Length: 121
Image 1 (cartoon, helix red, strand yellow):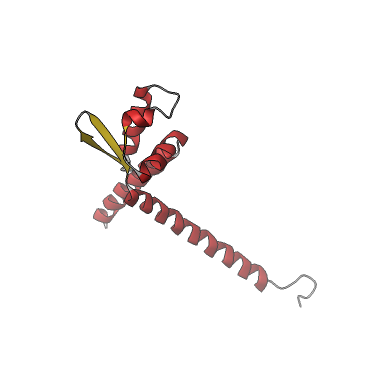
Image 2 (cartoon, helix red, strand yellow):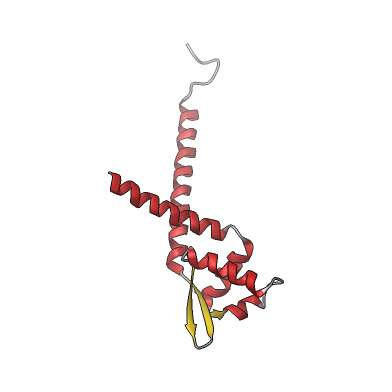
């Protein structure tokens, strides 16, 4: 039981890191740009009106969340998105969506089961 709580806590931390990283529009854009092909950090920085250091910080946040991976090739660091991490985030959101649909259906069932006013005996 205690070990499962530690595992769940670690997963919660991972999930928090993923969604905190995705909460920023610039970081979401970096993930989108690197889904189709690898880009150097320099090439990524060209797309934003911010300093290279600021872009590097965004990349570091994404890397800590396992949303992107950096690979050094020569003098460049190439960045590509991790589809597996994005899939995990999507699966979690899908699970929440199912819960909400189930709750909405139960509310509908409860409302249908209530007798109409004026017909109670």
